[in-house]
Image (tube, rainbow, N blue to C red; front, side, top):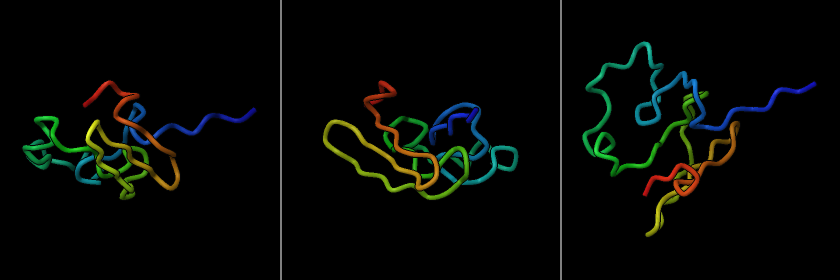
Length: 79
């Protein structure tokens, strides 16, 4: 039986989605202000820390990790 691969933003995350650093090593002020305000899409995969390919659209964004798949802001309810 195979276990499903978690998505880039699935919980629990091991890496910061705005810094790419391990969450244990990331300081609270490492997250940019625009990201804390919800104005910036995630740039790094929360599972592996790899840089994601991000496409910003007028109605949201989508991000793709080469290992963990794609996530869309519409799926998360974020705009």
